[in-house]
Length: 151
Ligand code: ZN
Image: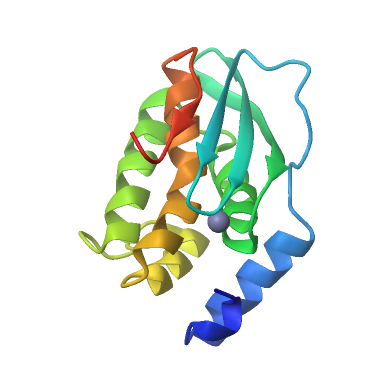
């Protein structure tokens, strides 16, 4: 499925295209205190998330990997939005994003991330968007295995 198969709002499309073409924080973080790898076999998205946490605050975040436009844009926007946040705030954001993507909540307080509400009704694309968030949670919990959306 290509982006054109989905009827998307302009803002949504613009943000996804921008962040997938020029992903922010797309780099290995040598200073990472937490990291994990995630895989979405349905689409082939593969991501490694790096978090540099100090004094209970995300000092820096980055990611590496290969995937579709949605997974890349989601990783880019996620790493942007967690910088400077505490562990508790990040945990809250992870739950909120999941609720947003699955339709359980609206985008209140999510800023730019709210554009992902455009994925509702496309369950396979929701997995592309949430993969990096599952991986972030695993990184923060120091889960050693690869995270899969199909477990
Ligand atoms: Zn994907």
